[in-house]
Length: 364
Ligand code: UD1
Picture 1 (cartoon, rainbow, N blue to C red):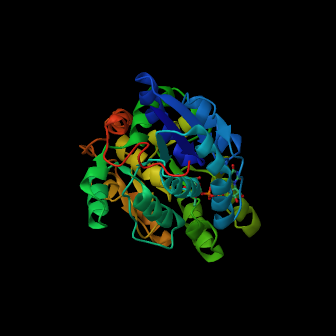
Picture 2 (cartoon, rainbow, N blue to C red; picture 1 turned 180 degrees about the vertical axis):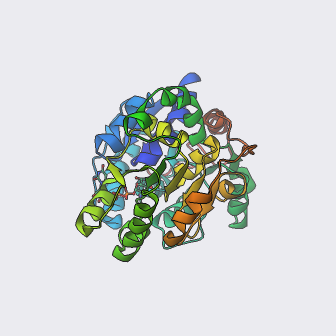
Picture 3 (cartoon, rainbow, N blue to C red; picture 1 turned 135 degrees about the vertical axis):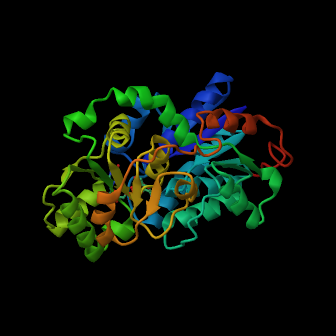
């Protein structure tokens, strides 16, 4: 059996690592296609090195652009790859533009498509990721879900039971695998973040592209930084918006995007994390670190019901919430967030399925 994995942006890479490792352990042939959506070392190659993922076999080098441009470039460049490679499965991850683009092309070529992290829903179609999730799940033949709410969402949208397989959370596989090395990284100490520190990551257009909202967030962070270290590893688009805005950041420390192990080191010892990232809502849940998500909704409701996450749509509330936060004592661990999700994904891919395989393949 041959798997062709398609990844492109930072959050895809920790999801690929455990599936790739589990597939290698049972001797499957694998091909990694990197679309090139992310290309800076801190957002891409650094993850491959730290997570021990082989260098991609193919890089489509699509780069940045509008959503339509980026999606179209991936579609155009991946079509001949899928025709040439003829995999048994195309495996796509998460909800980025590369995921959507590969899903559309694989599906039209009749190549069986598996989606890792299927079924997450924010029910907010102003988020580009929600559109990517909905379309990818509609097209996928195998829906590998991280939580039971995702199974329910897929069933309620009419997906057949036999396509839905609960595997648990592959990001958590990577987190648990890397935690000992992350604890040794020493990054938090090097950047002056102690147990009272607040770590910030923001990159969603709704937070960083609206100047009034960015100003309100900055005011709140400046306020928090009067009492404690506020460390902000900034995504390139966020760094650009902050520089353009000329906003006064006070004591807030802006850093370049942190490497994976450094980021886990930073958040695992922090007082709290302020974020709009999906993955960090999950990582803080496992690490037991309070997480304030600067959004009105989340596609990961399990981090609210069983984790440490809370939604804070209004940035003016941030400073008072941060002051009152306490680390939780006893915690629940969501089902399947146990370090074995990659293995369960590979077991599901190996199961014979009605309608999959060469009988579904059309013009490839
Ligand atoms: C993308 C994903 C988002 C994910 C995020 C993680 C989509 C729709 N969005 O958002 O879901 O949470 O990645 O980081 O797929 N840039 C660089 N260097 C890079 C890549 C990008 O400087 O290596 C800059 C460019 O100015 C680019 C901007 O960041 O225009 C946005 O990059 P893009 O990949 O389009 O979206 P992200 O905001 O990173």
